[in-house]
View 1 (cartoon, rainbow, N blue to C red):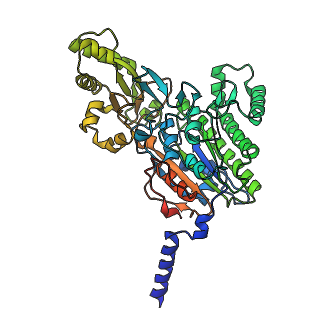
View 2 (cartoon, helix red, strand yellow):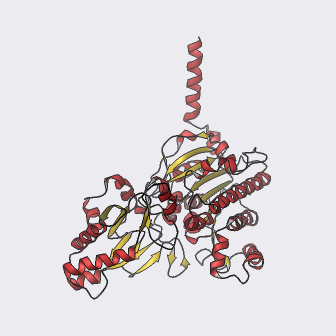
View 3 (cartoon, rainbow, N blue to C red):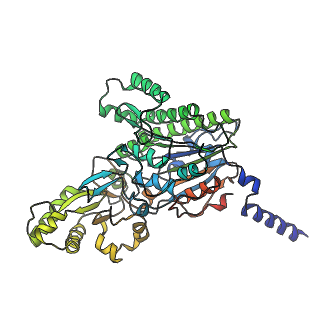
Length: 500
């Protein structure tokens, strides 16, 4: 009898974890709150846990600790890409697809047709738009089946707001020269409630400030507070969650990334910003609880768009080899090698580089009648001589399926785009990075760049810490299941069925 009871308990628990009841599945949330912390490496929630607000209760929720105690928490969610960064990261969250197939392999790249570098959200007609994103998003699919649903996104960075909002967002807001702004793609001008907030910000904090001073302010806890204030104003003025149609409010805390690049992930400045995020998330949850009476009709997703390595100094002090790869110096070495082999062309050999992707100048190839594949190989050979280089691959090798670094093979396949990515791509050693204006930057697929936390909170979600393997592309499929809609067009992630 005892064994039979144990069997029944096991059987019942298995059944209850295998499926939702139909009435549960039909109970769509009133609001989805998407919280993305820019540059949120996976250990932030672990290292700073004791400094965060107490978890609190459903009546008086805290911030991070409330979400990880009451939600499904995956401490190590993965961006399985070669170089984790902002624009592809935010796009992956809402499309559930990899950068290689959605037209967003990097933050910016060299356009071989336009013969210039372009930003991922650049639009010649409307200044900023999602037109380069070649997939629908969760918000787009929601709008297909629910015309009254609203999708609003907020971030200091335009690329973050645009990728979270998708093609059919009602509004996407980012911080520009005159405060919070948008583009004609979404609206001819910002609504009055945004103008009012801009007036307050400029009069109180930004009046007579220069660009450097403004950037410094945005990379502080004030940037977090202003981002949340705009989101709270959107919640109230756009009446999000007030009817039977599910709405999406997506926000990204760009200030975290701005400070992280300047000071590094273990700095007091980044810690202060993380604690500010904790307070502001608690504030939002309390507002939602007051607005709806409870949090039962809310789904919250918390994650990051990528991580970050330690600074070079921090790594070296820990006895780890570290350094920066200087692209300008590399250009000179490549020019010397190629000039000696093919003769000096009338134009430079390398036209541009972005995130250790190097673009060969076709005019130089034509001038010296040099085969592109051979030039790529010479550039690769020179790159392999650089300190801090783990491996190198070329577009010719990629197209033929040859010599792709084994360690990162799947990561490369998920991110590299033959049309948009570079002709030669350097894969640095751990703790090495490209040299730019930042103190530290993220251009790799190593653990510190590719792992972020994921937390999913909702009425039908079973709280707990989940050890299962999870990729960021799984979020869109899971959220689509919750919203009872099709996943985005190019979505390839799985539904995280273990959380229901």
